[in-house]
Amino acid sequence: MNRKRTHVLIAGGGVAALEAAIALRELAADSVDLELLSPDEYFAYRPLAVTLPFDETEAMRFPLSQLADAVGATATRGALTGIDAWRHVAHTSTNRDVGYDVLLVACGALPLPSIEGALTFRGPSDADLVRHVLDEVARDEIRSVAFVVPWGPAWPLPAYELALLAGSHLGRRGELWVVTPEKEPLQLFGGPASVAVRELLEARNVRLRTDAYAERFVDGRLELVPDEPLEVDRVIALPRLAGTPIDGIPQTIEGFIPVDDHGRVHGVADVYAAGDATSFPVKHGGLATQQALAAAEMIAAKSGADVDPQPFRPVVHGLLLTGSEPRFFRRELHGTAENEPVAASEALWWPSAKIAGRHLGPFLATLVGHPEPHVEPPDDALAVQVPLEHDLLDELDLGRFPTGDDTPDGEPELSAVSAMDVSEVAPEDTLGEIAERMLRDDLSAALVCEHGRLIGILTTHDLIGAFAARAHPSEARARQWMTAEPITLDPPWNRASAARVMRAYGIRHLPLVEHGDRRPVGMLYLEEEAPAVMPVGLGF
Image (cartoon, rainbow, N blue to C red; front, side, top):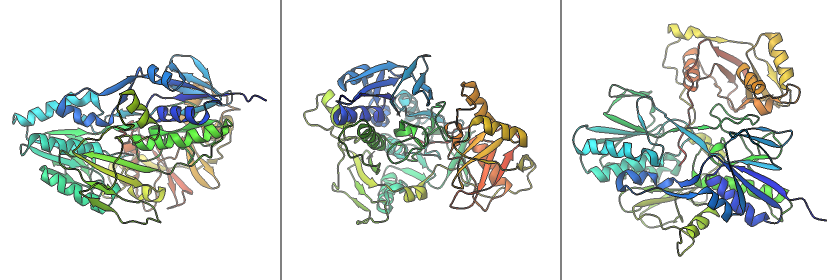
């Protein structure tokens, strides 16, 4: 008996989308039909964008329709705006509905300005801005420049690369800084790597400010928490990433999608997500391809292919452009690590490219006609390979704004913070049931809990958005429309720290939880209009 082919709709046109498409073609060509949904005309290879201000080369890009043809997929123009999970229909920005058997959301993230008053380096389009600042230093029109890693889910290498390449380009002219919320430079890679990076920064005349959360740049002063302001002439910051709003799919306050180790979206049947669109805290193209591969293997197995799907077990590859001789780092970040962190001047490992996707790397190399199935890395580079574990990622997570209590409770504006009653609902409760309960109890938010643990929050704003999207009150569930993995506050806390967190994230409801187990014990409310700020990191 012939098995019905599975129609897989892949929303996105970046590294995760292409890795998944190529993997599905190789794993399940006889059982799946592929369709790429993307608003972009081209796939741009962005990881080498940091070199553009210095050599004025053009960024590499490929027509997306050509790539779709090469992997045996059809290409549809448009962005994913929402889904009808019950009917397996995707809504798009072109007002066209697209049916699917399986949906893989790999639409990446939006780079947003991270620091008020600063220049933002998002990629190739901002190379001229960086080049102009470097020219200002070279002409002695300005003296100092700070390259800033914002707080939030981040991949901080581009800030270090820009600073090191600028130091090599300018020589001893000017005063260069790297400002980062990390406790040590590139702390993800361990102590030896941090020591080596400090040496590289010093050799390039680049100063370093760690454990510093940048807020804004005003009148030549970069305001930092908890440090004193840094006086500089220009600030070039990496962007914050925000997930694209998608109706009917649970997303965090930053817009990211929580998934399991096979890329499945919690509580939404036949929907997967991979790459920067997910809530995985490290945003990096290589990790995006690994997530995409895990999702593709599960989709292939579900469609009937002979595949043993493996879970996402992240190994981060980082190649740091330095402007000097290469250094190599390696660190295992899990509880059963067999080797200590190593930093060496001889190669310990060498990546095939900036983005080391199992399928995407060789595929792109073939397109550009490289004689070998890999792209040679630049000579002046650091290469690293690090297995990641979730518990250690939590220790290294820079995705939460600091909640220090250095602001006294007595400040007048803190009277806007008050406690409110807590209402707990289940993730499978309908929006109609929840709305009735909130109306009856005169509440503006309900906490979504599963087995006693907080997994989301549903506010009146969320309900209005759901009903505006024509969600049916008796069909739509809390899990689909809640804000997933909400920002919370652990003890000890005070009104000052609560107000700071809510204003930083642009939220008005802040659940209080027991330390470590996310069991809700209360809720705070900010009685003012909070600024809409998306606190996220960089995703090269």
